[in-house]
Structure formats: structure tokens, C-alpha cells
Length: 180
Image (cartoon, rainbow, N blue to C red):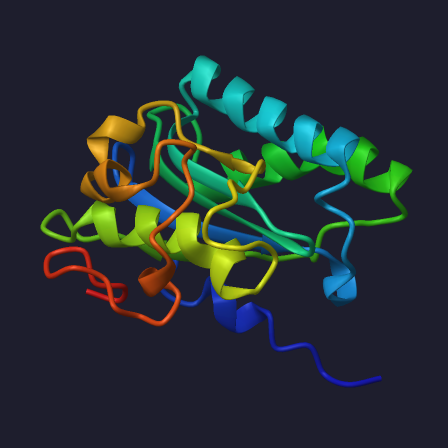
């Protein structure tokens, strides 16, 4: 059996209340199935519950077939590890209905106070388009953002909520470029 190196994810992990984090959680063996409507709905519901409880203020969230991305502000009550652990616990039954489970660990990036949340929200929004899961004029049903007006890029979406086709090729207007 190969040596697991997930312990490296814990090195230098710092959990600071009221701090923004970009979190990615993956299914075991990256098995797809999270976008099954019942599973995706349970994930959104658990995310909304974390927001309501104040454990994690939701900025943006998307469900991909084998992983999720979550941009959040950590609440005051729980550490990031406990918040994600609780969220995974609350969603495990829904994953089990699709024969899925979460990987033991998760990836997180703590945003510096001067780091722009816009780039992370845009990355989360564009992820299914860049993965080729839908056409630019379509709307990804598994993206959730309670206040899209807080992000500038949403002003450039088409009336239905799709993206300009040139964004897939990386030609995003100045000030909105992916990876800024």
C-alpha cells in the first residue's frame, strides 16, 4: 500500500476566524456523482446551514462531478478543520446514496487581507465551463452565490447567466482576467 502524504496538507494550516478561505473537497478516487440533483441539493443545503449557523459565511460555491469549491469567511465558533469536518459529516449520507464518500482531507488556501476575493469567485464560477461540462451560453445549475452583485464579473454574464464565449479561451476583459 502506498504511503499517504496527506499529512502534508496539515503543515502550516492556520485557522483564523473572520478570514476568507478557498476550500476544495474531493470524492474518494475522484469518483463522479456529486452533480446528481439529490446529492448537489444536499451539498448546497449543508453549505447554507453552515452560513445560517455562522460557522462559514458563504461567498461562492460550486459542485463539480467529483469535487466542490467553496469560498467562505470562517465564523468565530469553529476552526476551519471542524467546520469542514462538520460539513462533510452532514453531507456523507447524501454521498452514500450515490455510492460516494469524501476524501479524508481537503485543500484550503487562506486569503490574505489584501487578496482579491473576485479572482477566486470567478475561478469557482468558470470551473465547469473550463472543464467542458457546458457551453458558454448555458448556466451551471450547481453554482451558488447568495450575493452575486458583490463580484464584478457577474455584470458581464449574459441575461440568462451564461458567460461570454471568449472567457473560455482566456480572453477576459482587463480587470477580470482569470488568474489575476
